[in-house]
Each structure stands twice: as structure tokens, then as C-alpha cells.
Amino acid sequence: MRITVLGSGYVGLVSGACFADFGHFVTCVDLDKAKIERLNKGEMPIFEPGLEDLVRNNAKAGRLVFTTEIEPSVADADVVFIAVGTPSRRGDGHADLSYVYDAARMIGRAMTSFTVVVTKSTVPVGTGDEVERILRQVNPAGDFAVVSNPEFLREGAAIADFKIPDRVVIGAEDERAKRVMAEVYRPLSLNASPLFFVSRRTSELIKYAGNAFLALKITFINEMADLCEAVGANVQDVARGIGMDKRIGSKFLNAGPGYGGSCFPKDTLALVKTARDNDSPLSLVETTVTVNDNRKRAMARKVIAACGGSVRDKKIAVLGLTFKPNTDDMREAPALSIIQALQDKGARIAAFDPEGMEAASHLLQGVEFCDDAYDVVSDADALVIVTEWNQFRSLDFERIGAAMRHRVLVDLRNIYRYDEVERHGFEYTCVGRPSGVARGHLLEAAE
Ligand code: UDX
Image 1 (cartoon, rainbow, N blue to C red):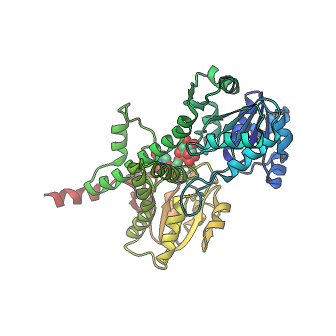
Image 2 (tube, protein in one colour):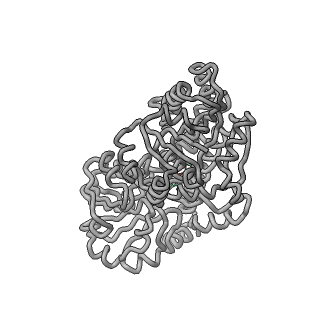
Image 3 (cartoon, rainbow, N blue to C red):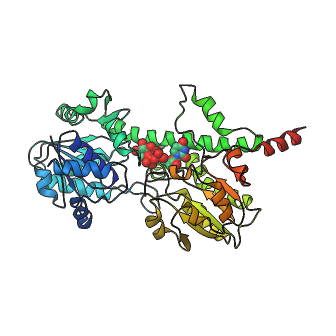
């Protein structure tokens, strides 16, 4: 198969590299010259474990090339994936599809023989119809089929998610296109990953429904964490207890500072818009969006409470800035709202993140970026763990405590236990797991 992928962002690059690894001949196209030049030198524009090796090996084997030239790449291809960005449109939350439609126009002009045009970007229901209309308009005699094939990969685990997916969703009505798509994913069907063929509109909706459901699951456990704090229960045990019920499942029940990233916030908003536009509002998803937004600010209040009610002129050390570990992505990261809220209340912020500081430095003002977890705590009044990078899971609390002005730890990802931290003299606050002391108070209050 000759595959061309338009857009060398997260989804495009990972998909392109993995398709090449499946043995296909892949051309990744991006209009950003500098990005393509870097990729041709084997330098990755994003941080994703395993990606660099995958790209280099496949490029060396001649199965993966990078170019800014769209026309010849499309003309030669059996399948063209559209993997360009679909950011939230300013003002109304709708997905901005202008890049997708530009790509469709370019494909329409360049395609020669039968071409399967696949939307891999997350696109609202009906986008495939519009892509088809554009292709037909630009190239009335063209032989093509438009397919939806959403991507479910998670940043930080993208390659494994791509190569060993729970399922591959393919929205296609054209029989030739279905056969081509089955061939594209043939190595996966050998791995027993099901290819799930549905209608194009259904496929488009599956992607949004999946992300919204996961966002809802996280938000449910986050609210449950607040209730656990109020009644003296342990949210991790609640999550385990309900997660053992196979109908619920144990994943995505980690309480924390709220979900962020490039997908959940954007896709939930876009789904809410689609639902409203179709007079079929999704009130659970609307509430999820609001609760999650509020949660980020509530986390700043948690820090302030841990600091005795004020952070004015205090130094707060922040560990972890990215929206989750193993990525350099700062999009919608809870750290952004938390840090801004603390700064508004007069705090000085020092921060360290293993991969996210470059991106964070463009988004945050007045933050002192440090070299490591031990540098960041120097003279700090509190330490806040916002993202659960593995390297923060075994901190030397004696060393940290000795460097701090006050031994206050706010663990927004529940990566420590009370006893581990308190024996080093730390006052410990986490999410949904009241301390033995707090439980005692609650019991007294109840009597
Ligand atoms: C997500 C979907 O998982 C993926 O299928 C889709 O293709 C893109 O969106 P991603 O944004 O990379 O992937 O990250 P994910 O691991 O899903 O985490 C999203 C956010 O939820 C992060 O901020 C994370 O910290 C948070 N989260 C996740 C929790 O707070 N608790 C959990 O239990 C799980």
C-alpha cells in the first residue's frame, strides 16, 4: 500500500510511522518547512517515547519519507489520511475544520486513480459528507471514497496504542474502500485487534462519544473524591471497589486535578455544540465540562488551605506541568490554571517538569523554572505535585524537607501515602483520601 498522511502533528506522525512499520510505503506531508527539515534529520517535533527510533528505522528502510510537496504525494497514493489539526474555534467551541477542508481541496486537485480519503483527525459528525462534497466539486470525474477512521491513541503511550489497539473503528460505505482499509490494518487483525466497520457518521460519533465518556468517568471520580474528603472515605478504595465490577471497569478512575490535554477539553466542547445544534443536548457532558473547569481552580484553593489560608508572598514549588506524564504537551494542563490562580493570590511560583518547561515558558509568566525536584523546593513554603511523572514517585523527603521553609506537601495525584510523608514531618494533603486525623475529627463531629 502507498499511504500519504497529511499533517505531521501528533496523530499524523505517529500514524505515519506505525503504518510504515506495518510494511507500507508512507509519505508524511506537512506545510511547515522547518518541521519537515527536522524530521528528515531524524529530529522529532514532539516528545513521544519510542517515536524517534520508529521514525529513524523506517526512514532508513525507505518506507517513510517526509515532504512539503502535497501534489505528487497524493497522486501516487492508494490511501490519503487527513491528520491535520481541528482546534476549537475561538468563541463558539465548534471544531475549526478549515484545515481539513483545505486538505480535501488539495487532495481533490492532486488525486489521479482510485483514492481512499480517510479522516483521521477528530471531526464532527457530517464532516465526511462535506469532504466528499468538496472532492466532488474540485474533481467531478475523480474516483474516490471518503472514510472515517478516528484515532484513539493516548499521548505518552501512542505507539503501543496504535499497534495494539482495543479496536480499529472504520466508517465506510464503499466496498472497495472497506477492502483497502482492511489491507491497511491487516497486521493488526493478525494481532486479534478487531476492525469494527460501521457507517461513516457512526464512526465520527464513536470518537466523540468515547472521549466524552472517559471525561465523564474521570469527572465522576473527581467529584466522588470531594465527597470522600467530606465524609472520611478513601477515593482510591472506592475506585477499586467499583472498578472490580466488570461493567464499570477499573481504568480512568484516578482522581486528580481534572483532565486536560489536546483531546478531552476540545472534544467534549465540540460534542456539546453538535448536540445542541441538533436539538439533542447532552446535559451530562455539559456538566462534565463545567465541573472539570471549576475543579482546576478548586485545586488552587486546596493549596491555599494547605498553606494556612494564604499564599501571599509565599514560595510554592510545583512539580509537573504537563497535562499528564510522558509528554511535553501543555495544552489545557491543570497546572496552568492552578499556577495562575496561585499567582493571583500573591504566590511566587518555582516549577520543574522533565519535558514541559519549554512549552510552559511560553504560557506562564513570572515562573522560576528549575533544574530538578530538589532545586525547585529551595526555601519553598509548600510543594505541589501536579503531574505524576515516575521520577516524582520516589522523592527523598529528608532532602526535600531540609531545603524547604515549611514542610507542606500537596499531592494532587495521590502518588504518596500519609505515613510515607508524615514520618518526615510533612503536613500532607491529597485528593479524596482524608488522613487518620481528619477521619477522627469527622467521627467526633458525628457523635
Ligand atoms: C485521550 C484519550 O485517552 C485518547 O483515546 C484520545 O485519542 C485522545 O484523548 P490523552 O489526551 O493523550 O488521550 O490522555 P489520557 O491519558 O486519556 O488523559 C487525559 C487527561 O485525563 C489527563 O489530564 C489525565 O491526567 C487525566 N486523567 C486520566 C485523570 O485525571 N484520571 C484518570 O484516571 C485518567
